Length: 217
Ligand code: DX5
Ligand code: ZN
Image (cartoon, rainbow, N blue to C red; front, top):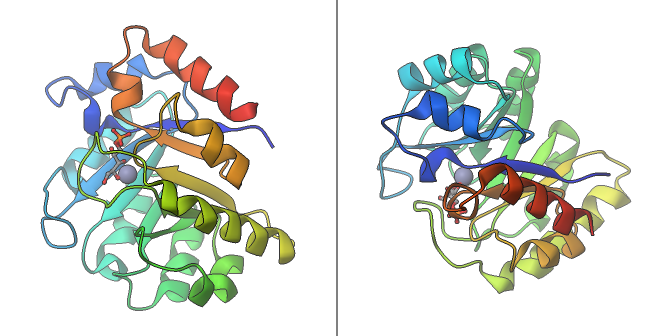
């Protein structure tokens, strides 16, 4: 399974999002961090901006919803054109129903776990998901350091997916860079969000290629 690179536009220039999406045209997805200042202590963008991004983006959008009440809001992101919609397990009231609704709307259904949230209670839910996001920093801000203690959890998630014979992608988000991506890949991740590492690079397409090569090992 080859690795997918999903740069986070949280580290892009918010005054020029269309050109910033074109700058990552060689990536597999563009990761869009939606924060509501309730689920996380930060505020980014919401549905009206997301809808326009979906219309102009040359790459499919991967919506990461760090919001309260995703049961109410997440389907609208699928309707707006997200290729993948990630809600947080800690925030969803009815994750199975929500995942089914996202798939019905044609999006990949994905669920995220904060660093302190264990995988084990959610193993039975994996069959409803296309992707599991293991947060490798506390959600809310870009530019934080990769939490090495999440590696065993990535490994357990990969083992659970394999044991169930499923094709669920495992995404990591937070502190992913040239320094950390190989360890995350070795642990079993195959989809890599990188914000500051990509948009902070001198040569953005080169950085995407380098990260992909390192992850592919
Ligand atoms: C953090 C966001 C991340 C963030 C990652 O809450 O979910 O997607 O943009 O940024 P870096 O790669 O800089 O850690
Ligand atoms: Zn994110």
